[in-house]
Image (cartoon, rainbow, N blue to C red):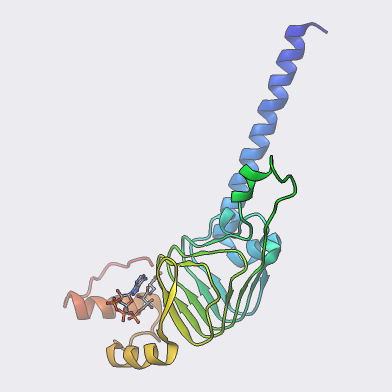
Length: 199
Ligand SMILES: CC(C)(COP(=O)(O)OP(=O)(O)OC[C@H]1O[C@@H](n2cnc3c(N)ncnc32)[C@H](O)[C@@H]1OP(=O)(O)O)[C@@H](O)C(=O)NCCC(=O)NCCS
């Protein structure tokens, strides 16, 4: 075979590999959107009952999804990221070739995780916990806590949060999405829109 033919063959194989990878990526994107819990389980994440993910991306569980365990009645909102290993070791492996640190993440029961939260290796989040939007969780969060910030700190108990929310409540939480939307418009716009809206 000529060198030109060998080169052409090499390029074609590389091209087909790329196309194959691209389809794999698209498949994962669609799967994560259409069946987030099915996707998470298939990656090896251990899930309890009634776990809801909003806006999942395929890379959200990092490279060791099987190190992640999530309890019952847990809501995890868009932009979340689990990290189960430290990458700082990479630049030091020329000095210590086997340098490595990975650790599991555990989330308890009745946990809400706000938008764009990052959970670092080795963290355990207890039961009945609320994590504020944009938080980075670097240390364990005890039961019955509301934690926020970078790094996340406990700001109150969930019991305290509940008492405040009972005072502030609009009493619409039981309504289906569309009815709630109309009721919110009634309150905040005074004129409910006739056309439907998506959530
Ligand atoms: C964490 C949360 C539940 C706290 O609600 P809350 O108890 O009503 O909080 P408060 O308004 O009493 O705030 C208490 C303090 O925490 C701060 N805080 C509240 N949320 C914060 C957050 N996400 N990050 C950083 N600080 C936050 C407030 O600024 C306030 O600080 P201060 O005491 O210095 O004034 C709420 O702020 C939150 O982030 N909810 C998640 C929202 C979300 O992701 N929604 C997704 C919809 S899909």
